[in-house]
Length: 166
Image (cartoon, rainbow, N blue to C red; front, side, top):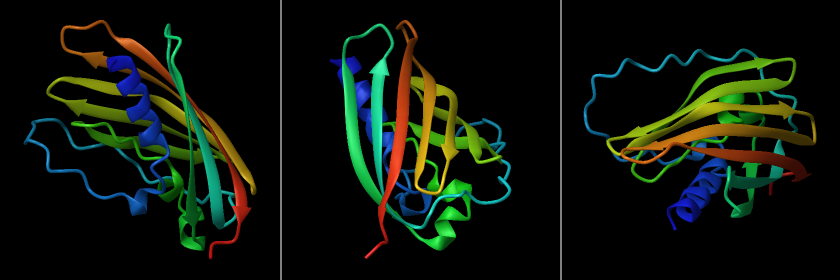
């Protein structure tokens, strides 16, 4: 049951839409952790503004369960010129998540996903390769829960441009 919930939560997190459309998470308890090391990525994507359909397939490595979620998001000119605005935002129930170390080079974005809570963490690298009418990528994450064995969570993302936003 926990694996199914984990897969569903990760898939929802990856298709949540553009960063600017995200509702802020509930305030987290104060921590002594260092501030995020997010550096601004230079340049924009090669994506066309408009309605995009995104498909995310999530699987916990070693498990037979696999979830696929399809969603649609509308991106404006200002979104596609700022890679941070089109990257999927991780949302994990009860965790504070951030995209860190975002880099964009030659049409490929790379970043680190970090989520943490008192009960555990979820972290790992992610990447997307952009084209005018498509993008594709993956995230290879590791979920650690107190008192449990770490598990690998693998996600593949693909998207295609549908039409101009209405």
